Length: 101
Image (cartoon, rainbow, N blue to C red):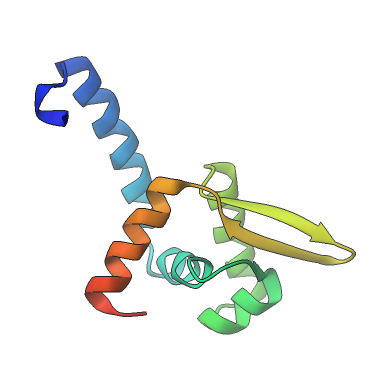
């Protein structure tokens, strides 16, 4: 249990949680992650689904990929994104349960 964890472990876990929450604190990133919680999506599909310009969506996706929240695969010219972080998936699932998709 976390209640029994040492101060060093608590600090390390708090740092991880804080980093995740900072990344998710953008409405645009949250919308993208919510869409990805339903499964893999292409960059074009995500852009359309969340109503962002291609450039804005690309910046958010690149940041989340650099931080390990999402992963990609390429099929010819199309890049597909999926959730790669289990903690992010759990937080998104919880938020979707509270606020709806």
